[in-house]
Image 1 (cartoon, rainbow, N blue to C red):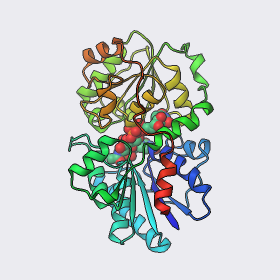
Image 2 (image 1 turned 30 degrees about the horizontal axis):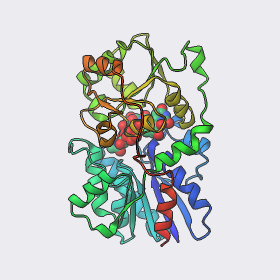
Image 3 (image 1 turned 180 degrees about the vertical axis):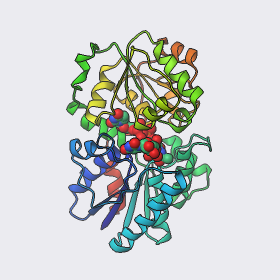
Image 4 (image 1 turned 90 degrees about the horizontal axis):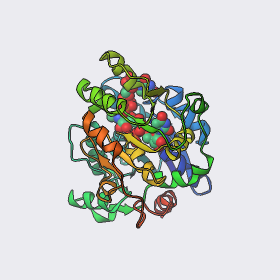
Length: 352
Ligand code: UD1
Ligand code: UDP
């Protein structure tokens, strides 16, 4: 079986690393990796291929930047050319980025079966580009690998046929288990005078926060008033917007460049609490028994909020400060994201 995997953005490299590792042990599958080029800086792309030993992409399409229509359109055209040449049996797409939608659309129009990993996630906020990407991808795909019961429920509610839906668990949980013991302390950590267990780990990159000066300023102000120092590995998009809007960050917020996944896992385990608008970090907090203050007004990962592990704080400074000081529940109860074998289940199903 020939499988073409389409990836392009940071979280997709991490998800695909886990699946590619399983594929490497299966003689009956040949995987070709297509990197759309959506993320292209070394610390947003190359670092993951190097440290997670992801096979070098067979194609790098070099399509990053620009408006959504332009980026998705250029990716669609370039992926179509690859699929016409490669003629795979399956195309595998991950998550909800523009690269996901471009990959799914290119394949379905060529009548190549598409499998979507992380299907069924919904924020019910149609202003999020990711919500549009995931709804359209799910409805185009032939096989929907849902990470949670909630995701399965969302797909059924939208009338997607039950035969297409598979509860696989979450490949990010597989990754968390596999890489936890390979975590690496960033070189700058001690130099900044930081202490294990006594800092807030923050990330910000969602368009709804970065492109809205009031929200971005509210988040920075909330973090500035944290009792503990804050470590903020900064996405290039956010760095640019802070500069554009003239928002200054005070000394208790340590801005560092984006880190590799192994360093991120170390920070997640070492921090006191996480504050983030990232989908991945909300779950990784839970995987490593930390809490996450969600810097958004809603989340797709509702089970973590329902269980009292994570807390929605939005972008209001006072609400963020109050959330950071609240004690949250310790992780206790049935695992919410499978048993750490999602990638094996996905590959078995594709083969069968
Ligand atoms: C994208 C995804 C988002 C995902 C995130 C993961 C979409 C619509 N959004 O958001 O779902 O959560 O990736 O991080 O697909 N840039 C660089 N260097 C890079 C990458 C980006 O400078 O290596 C800058 C460019 O100015 C670019 C901007 O960041 O225009 C935004 O990048 P883009 O990939 O469009 O969106 P993200 O915010 O990264
Ligand atoms: N991540 C990382 N370095 C960083 C920020 C995030 O390795 O500087 C990892 C993080 O641990 C998670 C994934 O990237 O596995 C999440 O990606 P991101 O927050 O960019 O996107 P989202 O999950 O919101 O789509």
